[in-house]
Length: 391
Image (tube, rainbow, N blue to C red; front, side, top):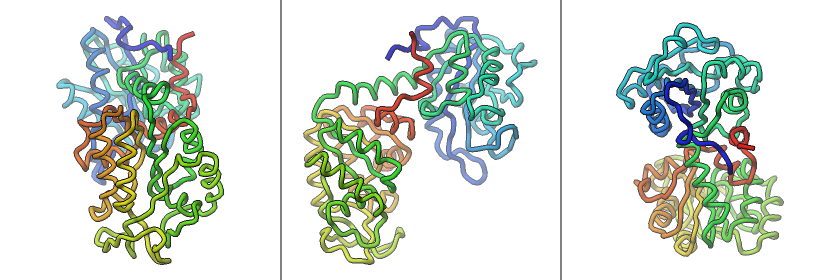
C-alpha cells in the first residue's frame, strides 16, 4: 500500500490539519467514560507540534443534525481532556470552516480543536465544495482516524483529495501495517474469531474470511445461527433463523473450518443474576438462553488457538459483561494472550473484554476501528485510505 506518512512530510512552519477519531463515549452528564481514542490520537499531534507545525484537529462526535450546533455533540469535553494529555491549552473553535481570526492567529507549536466536523453541512455526503473550503485552511492534511476510514466523508475523503499534501498519521499507518501483516502474508495457521449478536451484519465478512483462514471460530448470536445450521438446538437463544441457509452454505463450502460449539452455559433469563447451567447442545431446552460457550468447546478452541501462527479477533463469544457468562471469552482471550502467534484484535466489545480481563499488554495489536476493521477483514477498499494512495 503506497501512502505518504506524516513522518515523511516536512511540517515546519506549516499548517497541519489532522482528522482524528475522538468519538468517545460519555455519560449522561457529558463526562468522558473512556478516553482511549483521544490518547491514541496524541502521538500524531505531538509529532507535528514538535516539528514546528501549527496544528488544527477535528473529529466527529455522535450523530448531530448537520448545520446545527448542539451542546450534546460538542467536542468541548474532548478539548479539555486533550489539553490535559498534551500539557498545553487546546482552544475549541466553533465556526471554523471559512477561516477567520483563529486561522490567522494560529502559530507554530500551537494547537486548536475544531468543533465537531459533522456540524458542517455536507460533511457526511462528502461535499467537494466543503472539502475545498476546508483545504484552504491547511498546507498538510493528515488522516489519523482509522475508525472512520470506511466512510467517504468530507473530512475523511474529500479533504484528502483537495489538500495540497495528504498523508496518513501514525495511528492510521500502524493500523494498516498491522492488518496487512495479519492478512496479506500471515504466518499459518491463520485463525479468525468473529463473534457478536448478529450474523447478518457480518455474513459477507464470514464468507470472505472462511476462504482466507485455516479456522474460523464463531461466537455469540452468530454461533447460535451456525448451531441451527448444523442441526443443533439453541432453545430461546438469540439467532437469525432466516439466515440458517446462508450459514449452512458456508459450512458446506468450507468443511471443517468452522467449529460448532458442543456445549454451552445457559440460563432461563437474560440478567446478571441469572443462574448459569452447563448443558450439552443436544440437551438445550426450548426456554433456555445460550449465554456462553461451555468448557468442552473452550478446550477445543484453546487448542486451535495454541497452534495458530496468526490470530484475528473480533467479538466476545459470550455475555462477558455478566461474570457468570464471561468464562468463554476470558479463556479464549487468555489463550490468545499466551499464544506465540501474531495477534490482532478490534471492535468495541472486543476491546472492552480485553480491558476487563487485563490482556491489553499481551495482544500484539489492538485496533481502534470497528466497522473499518471489519471491512478491511472482508477485503473491501476503505475510501479514506484509497484517497491517500500515491499514484
